[in-house]
Amino acid sequence: MSRTLPVHRSGLLFGALFAASHAAWIGFVLAGVSESTVATVARANYVEYEDTVDFDPSLTGLGLAIAFAAGYAMGGLFALLWNATERSTSSLWTRRPVVRR
Image: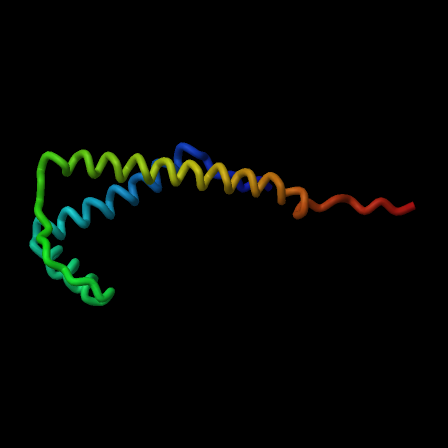
């Protein structure tokens, strides 16, 4: 039984997950929640936060595209590595007939 992952499908899945998380952050920015979130994370890491989080509509699409492309690349790389290790370890799990003499 071979358990290989399709590279293109894994890339699409990871890309969609990365873009969805980026879209959620865009929703936080539009809702005004991002300021308090960034300030809380900064305080938790002993960083003094003094700037604001602004929404730039011209960069929204570009940011989503970059997030999707990065996710696609990572998903494809994950599938390639998974398939390479699956091929190299598949011979360890196959049952070979016992030859008795």
